[in-house]
Picture 1 (cartoon, rainbow, N blue to C red):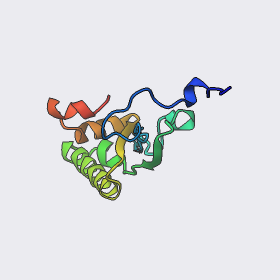
Picture 2 (picture 1 turned 135 degrees about the vertical axis):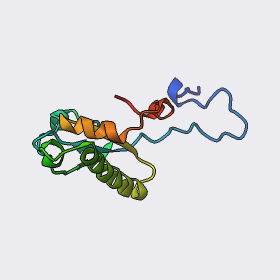
Picture 3 (picture 1 turned 180 degrees about the horizontal axis):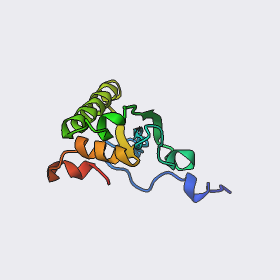
Picture 4 (picture 1 turned 30 degrees about the horizontal axis):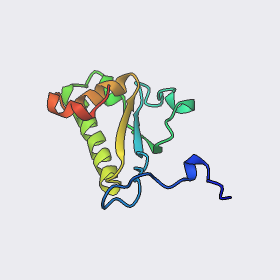
Length: 129
């Protein structure tokens, strides 16, 4: 008498033409960029215990907060810091083209990210707030 294997080990009942096996996509991978708050050091507490497993590396963007908040600050200085962040993002994304970029901000860092994210709705499909 022949015994049958368990149902999960049996061959498929049907197969699709030209499809050898079920392809499981690899999990996403991302690079996180953190933009600190007004003191230049404070980062979101997210990175203590809630960092997603698919984040492969974390970069902390360093800037001089006094460029944005002192008496000589202007919208141009905020734009300059945002431009520095864009340069940093581009340098990493050129090396790691397959990974997503995630931006996290705290306090004043949110204003810098608002300068980086384009206001047009056509870009917001890929950006989560």
